Image (cartoon, rainbow, N blue to C red; front, side):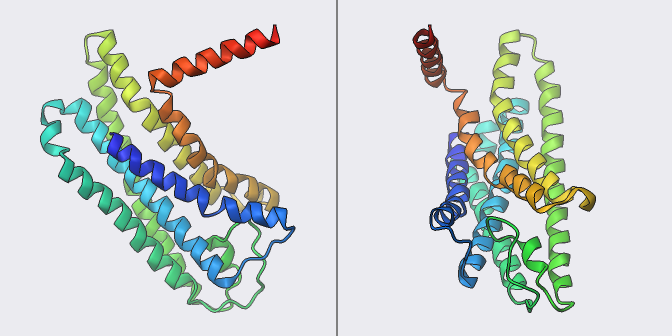
Length: 255
């Protein structure tokens, strides 16, 4: 679990680092400009990190399933070599996905403006600049990517159906509490990641507006990577004690 959390932390750190510093710099220098190569780099890194993170969350659902539903086989099925291979597959799949989409998107002729209505470059905004029918290639790739996302989502849901079924059969309350505490942080991260992304890309066009699109983009691009460390840290007893002491000290200062 901690090996996968390390990989998740690196992906979250990359997700924040590839868009927030540029946005902050633009705000400080009162500019909204970005170079063509910089825009391409943002698209590549965004797709790479998000696809790898989603794949890793799917792998972590499988890890929780094996730990709870097949605990006697955990050491065999989730050995160090298997974990490394799964993490490498998540990173490699994200890289190939980003390379394919980025190369295809920036090979499309763009001639209908150069103003992106976001605080970073993303494919749907760039496709608005297309002046040919070649953008259909990218739409096809997005449909294929959406199908893969849906398959991973179904896998996660089925894993948790099996997990909760097994947890409810545990006779002791302490055992159920331990199993739930093992799964709830991951489930919270998946729910936040998937719900914000689905709302951003599947919301009806009738409610779409530049300001709403900006808020929704912040929700799925910035909030999950920023909140994930806090969600997983709440399982740490030392951190809980530190937060409790901090809250008591704040209340004492107010009194």
